[in-house]
Length: 348
Image (tube, rainbow, N blue to C red; front, side, top):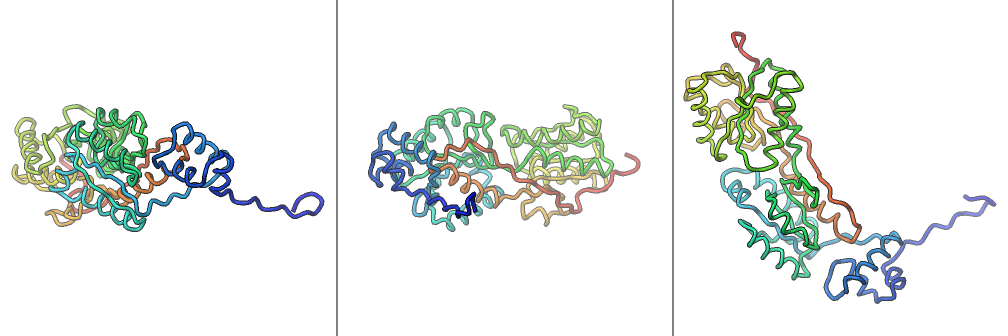
């Protein structure tokens, strides 16, 4: 009710016809402009989008029957073959796409030339509403995509300059939680086993540092072991080499991925050490096979399926001319306690 006892009249929902009339164009032209279709001048498209915004017109966010190009990096393809992280991200993505009636078109990207060809394909195809970059955060490729006028969302990757939206696990906090879990069990000399090269893994390295510094333990450079690839046998070799050079000067290992954690257990066993009574080992990912190792691997659970599904939803949010700024969505991770970690041995 309002003053004078008169009932307030509900405001009428703004329709596409209102936007078209205000701009002096046909409904079909307004529709094409808001959907990012061809045949509309750039200045006219901008005017129509701005008018829709001022009128609070809700642009329908349906992309049923249209396509999204999934550009997968070489790292993603290698991971897909070797273990199941990428598999489960794609499973979540494909389930969400099926629910929305969207076709996912996959493309492998190994260099900037292939990315340029993909962007041109996506730009010229009116049926393509946007692109997902899977495990692809190379600086040159992100720079190349800066002029692309359709939404791009990074999946399991991030853009430090926030030019593109992204979806990742909260890698830094996950590694900090894992390290704090080991510290709570009495471990102070915690080796960090990693394969450098991607920003997402660097975030895990930073989380390990955060926890050690917070507890006054120091994040010494000599407690980091680099592995040239994600293969367990290479991690086993690296741990064996470390033991030969320094002896057992650590009581726990935090690996930046489950595959490296498995390799660490192999290397410790080969050196005659037992997990967890001599050395605790913790991974990150919680791949299904982690529960079946001997001993079963304690690890950080990464919500892989949810990452894939959320990436498509984020791309959907960027459609319709709402001018949303790039966002970074990070999923919380949690500890899965199994038998590869335990209290520090008293004599250590």
